Amino acid sequence: MWTLTDFILSYFVNQIFLTLLELLVFLFQ
Image 1 (cartoon, rainbow, N blue to C red):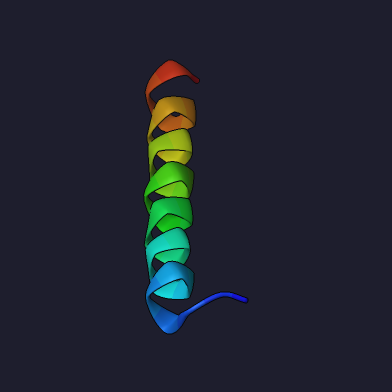
Image 2: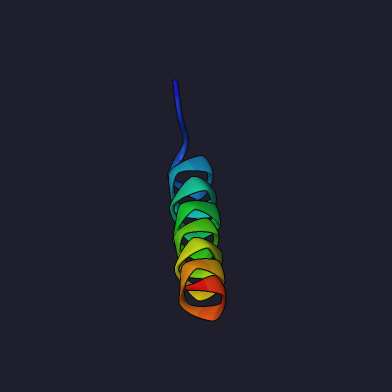
């Protein structure tokens, strides 16, 4: 069972990961 903290933490980690991916794509295109 997930707590609210786990959910928020995973959400932020995903957001950061996606942002980094977009940055990499932008830099290396």
